[in-house]
Picture 1 (spheres, helix red, strand yellow):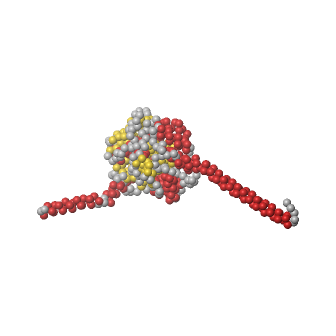
Picture 2 (picture 1 turned 45 degrees about the vertical axis):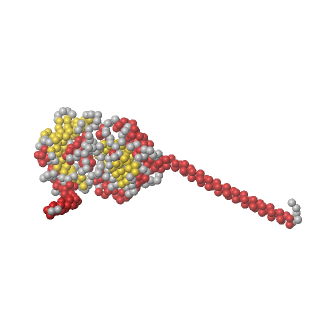
Picture 3 (picture 1 turned 90 degrees about the horizontal axis):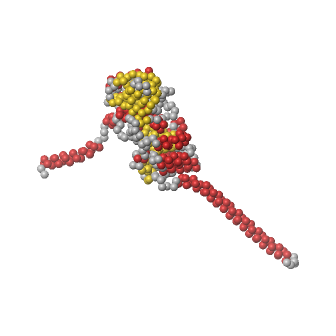
Length: 521
């Protein structure tokens, strides 16, 4: 080999050694921060619109963003500090009070990232980017339509309308009187505008379509049926019957179950476990609900220990929960989130039952968080075809047990006949880990500590235990009486033997005494 060829060989050999090392060089911290912040959304609102039809729209928007995998920081406009908007790649401003809209525009003036404005009076920056021309209307009855879905008779007291704009439009808002027909939303590049949003009607779904496009989400979405408020104190026989009905109708479902922290050795707890085993055997998936802060106190360490104990109890009964549920305020608190939701990356967030001040802390998304929407809100929506269009976000269609308990004969047929494409939750990858056990789903299989948790062929051991308890108690009484009888028999026999001994001794003593006295028998 010539010297030049040898040099080439060693250069090639050195290059081969360096390539793997180059691949292992860590990404600079600045680049990591940029990638991390690219998913960040700063949400600024002027008011919570309490006691108005728009009440709850800020919280609903936050839940939508978390379901779409976004990291969200929510602050009021009066708490905004200069430079906050520049820390996020995306900005959403919500104007619920027209008089306060100017303060939002002033605070975010000069922002150069992606910007979505919801409500009246879009900032001048968006007007210029979208070539917007708007007007207002009062006391209108609307028909909302988007993506093949529509809803009539949506009443609005005050409404902003898009008269002209340049960009991709979403949905339509049509006056019932035919006085206007305007887009629900518009987007061009990283700028978007939605003039109207109130939770509880189709605008909730329509906004999700806008967010999906604005955030660049491309993954397909699934929908699931979720039954809420399952506790040990409901009619568990009806729960088992409902599970069988859904199974016979070919509808996979989830149940959100309330934990029980005390008296876990009582028969009621064993009956609860037996009912959940039945749910699981009928292709139901179990999620565990985290109590709201008011009912669990403020000691998060105690709550985490209690939740861990209940999860272990479920696993020991052969039940494999795949995630958690809870009110969104639990996710907004750092300590509360760690106490309640740390066991699983799968969580369904419900609206807060009571008013709760938003935390300025950044709320991180979960690995999987289907958006919860009540079934009555979804079923009031009309569709062009029998088959539902693709939803913009993974969705958990919820039924409250209180509603099912009263109208089970009506609710189940309406859900079964709705043609909603309910997916099997176990077809996705979900996992939950307690201190002693791990439950997971993988390609439709339900696993508990690495073994199949299918109860289809099992004979319901918890139920059998319940049925065997009275005979066991009866047997214990029989054993007790048997022991008592034996003791009495021994005492009687002993007494008789002693009596015989005394009789014999007495007879001999009397006989000897009689002979000594010279008598005869």
